[in-house]
Image 1 (cartoon, rainbow, N blue to C red):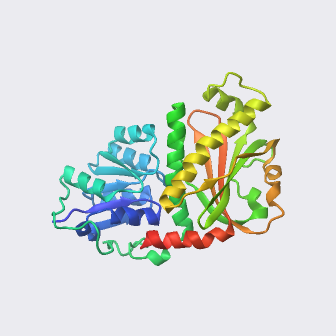
Image 2 (cartoon, rainbow, N blue to C red):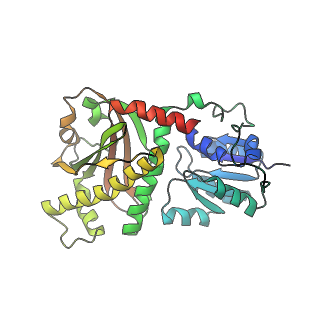
Image 3 (cartoon, rainbow, N blue to C red):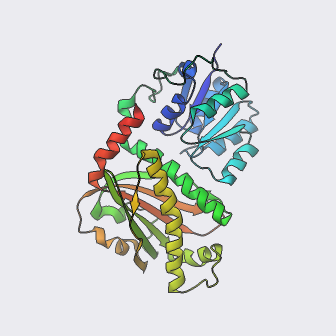
Length: 345
């Protein structure tokens, strides 16, 4: 009898990728949930043999699902599959009862090894890890593994950004010995002139400083922008172990160091997943100690549509506010759509 496997992830693309990482014979045994609440309802009704669980989800995240499983004494082999690869993230899920941790995107050979290790399934030697598209045994669920045509560009980019964000957060966490809370990246098509209206962290009364860096690749172009709250500079300088903690020069140094850490790792993560080499321009300080709309003033006179990814970084137990925007030009959309098709096949 084949095992019953549940995949819980808010991203349709991630659910598809995880299902395709399973041995071919198991793909018709897969059920899907889009968030932690759905997963708990499904598990309470019938406990599957194995759960592949994302961490970063709306409504009820992976940590909370693990806490519920433990408090309700539900025994379930749970493998966390996440883009958040920080050391503390891994330690926390193991302390909550997860038996293994897989980095996104998932490698089929690692999945097969875990399935064999826990006696769930051993694939015959003559079997191939590639094959037909997997089918779900929950036809009422809209996230069918065969609905590739319904996979939206926003979902695709959100998942790509989620994995890239995990890499940049991991680098920052290891350098500073901290834990970075992972937000769900926001993806939206906006007019360049309306950019300031989309920023979730923008406070009309708060002042920020900003640095930007352009990037180009085969078929794509855009810029990454870091908005750093003025109230966070001293604490960030202290964490970076600067000798001097105050002053204009220190603020610029914080901006440049943070942009170097976050832009480099994030854009490399984007490029690796898209099989794309991105060239970066020199970072430029847009302005200091201004309101958001002033810092983004250079976009006001442009009416082109932008594809905007926004990530609001937050460091645990620290009063640090930092927003990163990654803006793709309108001309980048054909390339992104083509990559989406490739990943969905």
